[in-house]
Image (cartoon, rainbow, N blue to C red; front, side, top):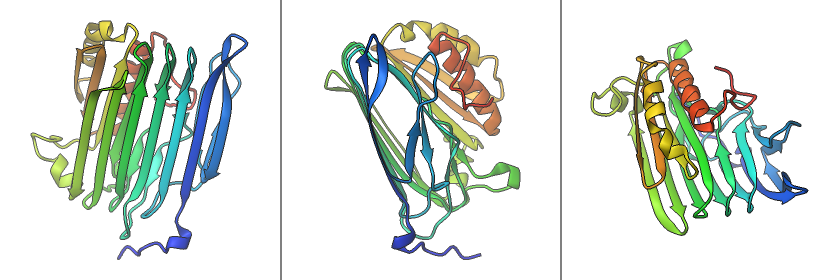
Length: 273
């Protein structure tokens, strides 16, 4: 079936601006600006855990997301998503997702969305810019699944451009670009790229005592032989990279690493592993 371009008037656009601040000795969401298809909810609980919701049900060619999150001084909050983000196939322009995270002095930020699922023919350009204070702490992850594998689908065609930049105290400390164009599945089949993987993830832990947990994280990765994984630490940064043929196996491995780095046995309430 030939994919049809989506008319501009049917495209979905979402904006989100959040600011966490200190109030009465705890963290509270003091600013919430929602636009288009994006909403956020903060369930009651002992910790601040905000849930981002895309009411459009997914992204298609020409859709755009712009989200800006700020953690003010001494705050602690986690952001996750209601479900996996779906990017549908399209013959039109790429959909775009722009995320800006600002983490103030002594703040502790967690950005732990569920995975992004790319349908065959999906076109996604995503940029993430993170600014940390020198004494801030960040736990951040992103994972991607290439195709609806349960339906026998692969990303035979499509586009993924994923750029991440992290600055700490104004200095660039981490930069990465993942670019898979035209034939993502064929590229991932190459032994030196994905070795047949259909899911990948990156996990970053910056600040606090997380870099000292490198040995524990590496030991935990050994418990997941069906996932190609590696972890390294330098200059206060701990990075974990995961590749797997089976997306549920990758999620289980990612969840185990997150528990170690969070120093607690639980995950965001909406995660299912």
